[in-house]
Image (cartoon, rainbow, N blue to C red):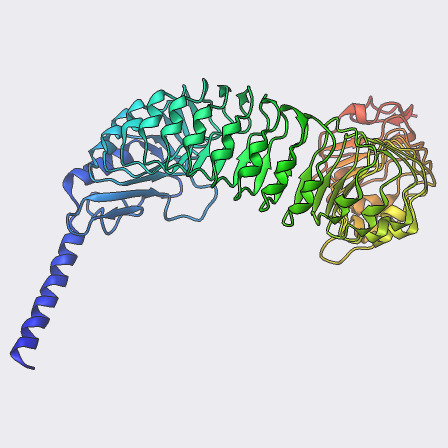
Length: 564
């Protein structure tokens, strides 16, 4: 080998050895800081920190630790990084000694559930931090004010703890922040105007706190914002017109607040908007026609407000729309416009919107529908034969209307239907057309079935326990129908039943042995019938109210049977 090549090889090997040497050198200050953190952990049943010991190198042997190979200083603390168990946890507190990790850029201690106490204010001295993620633990107290001064911070994730206090004006100092998630805590007060200084912020998630006051108009300066999530708070005032300045916005989630006023027309100026969740507020006025300009919309949920009609036809411009939920608004639309059938949505909810007359015929051509909710209206007439042509339906709710007919045989074509609620109508005839519907094999077996408060007759079919469509049913409600007959013995084979309601059905005879032993059952109501005999022994606690009104029944949980 020529001398020059040998020298080059020697230098290369020397460099690799030197690099390896540096990568294994754990700085003593950082080691002691990490061991102090471990000392603050009082319980580690899954051995998450089992590799952390005084003889090993924190840079090479300790799980969840990354170092700068040139200096041996810890740059990342990422726990858990070594377990797949969803039940894994650590119990203890977060040691202030972590502030000795002066080169730390990533602090991630997520989902360990039982790490409690305050977040140490001394973490604010770690000026190189870019990522703090302490979500899904049990931290309490206020967010340390020192964290708001970490100029290099990009991501601050503190969701799903028990943090309290308020958001200070200092939050506006985190001008480089990209992701802020404080959701599912107990933060109070108002959203400070200074939040508008966070011009790099892409995600603002404050869902499920106790924030109050107005949405600050300064949000119009947050021009990088893609996800605005402020739902489940106590926010009031109006939705500012300036929201139309956030041209990158993809999601607006403000449901379950007390927002008033109109939906701003500027919402139609958002070309990237995909999701609008404004349900459970106090919004008034009409749905702005400009909403049709946000052509990337997938979901519109405006339910449970005080919006008035009409439904703007500009919605037909939203060719990607999948969900339209306008339920429980006083739209008074009476006859839903036929163009709704051409939207191609998967979910359509017009419950409680003032619909009258028969079921709209355009529904039979709405082949894309999988979820249809027209409950709590004044729909009358029959369930038409064409109902079976909406064969993609998985959820159908026509409860609380004025329908009066038998169930047509074409109902069997709803082979994908898993959730059905026809309660509180005046439907009649036998149960079989519903119970014997087809299924598609993978889907179509009932999960919930509610036929209560109707006029069905003819009893419960004896072979109900052998019907494939009911093999996975969890909620079965036949109550308040003049069915008559007895409780079939085969019903005990429906071993997924959690809730069974057959009150006031004119039932007689005894409760079959084994029915009350279904392992997952939590509710059983056969009150106000003519059942007789001893209630079968059962291991699960059932309320006495579910058996009352049957003079011939006795035994636990009713008074004991009299001896002959």
